[in-house]
Length: 332
Figure 1 (tube, rainbow, N blue to C red):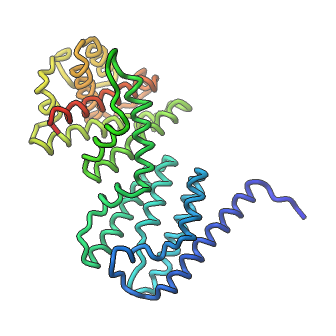
Figure 2: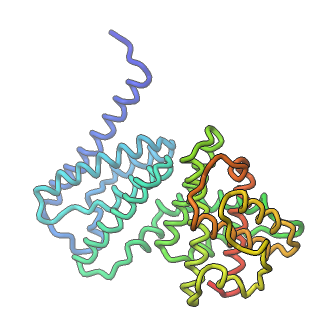
């Protein structure tokens, strides 16, 4: 008998696992019949203990590609079952698991889309059964998201904040950062961790091959983090842009302008700012400079700005330290 290759073996194993998951789902749907969902607990009855066990075993082994295929199969099976049902099975869990697995594999766009599909599916069913729901809040409080968020917070602390502390400065703890993110709106929490994952992935790709797409993705991530600060300031008090929101710190002028027309101008202004002895003002100014450039320019040609991962992460640190300072001052 011909010996199959390791790749063929993996394909066969994947197929069998997906068949098992689909089988358990279909059998449970037959058992449930076409009964309406009347309580919150009934929303996920079709996700059997066997399905959960298969999912957990794949996740524990960090087989994220298989995890994605598994939950994609269960989503497709749910769609097939729902064609003949008046009372549709909920797809919230399968779509959320699918989205998380895609984000971990740096499929940011697909993953985020499926997370929001999951939220929409949950909201539709919860409204149908008369429950006051906040699907985004339910999602960020789930074990699945907490695992994803925990890894993200560790990345912020160990790769961004600790390497960029000044002499005598004490790093926030994991608990401090968790409490800070718990205060953010659920939708913002999802958005920020998706963007952070995008940033880290883009930096890895940029090290392998510096190209226009990886550079654009880095710039887009920085812009989003800066916009997070601006949005947070506006939610507390109407401000006309990031400069107005930060100017309670009495920011000094920089070479005549806080804006830069090209990357050379941006790097020049950041270099000037880095001589400022007030660390809080220095970080706020770096945040403002990056916000103004990335919000109005698409230039991502080969440039020294993108050469150092550590330097880019120092800019991310400036943004995060500024956000934490604004929070401590009650400005957001």
